[in-house]
Image (tube, rainbow, N blue to C red):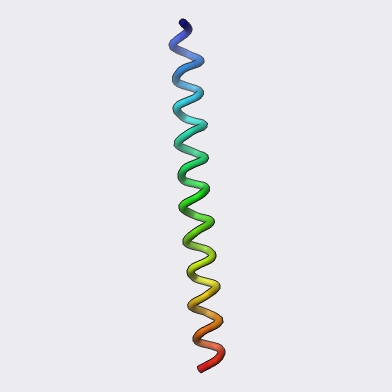
Length: 39
């Protein structure tokens, strides 16, 4: 059991989750922009 490795894994998980959220937000913004351009 190495606490340093555990901390690194937690950070990588957080970064991955944040990246997913950012990706979803970007997709939603693109959809909104498309709707605006149609209107």
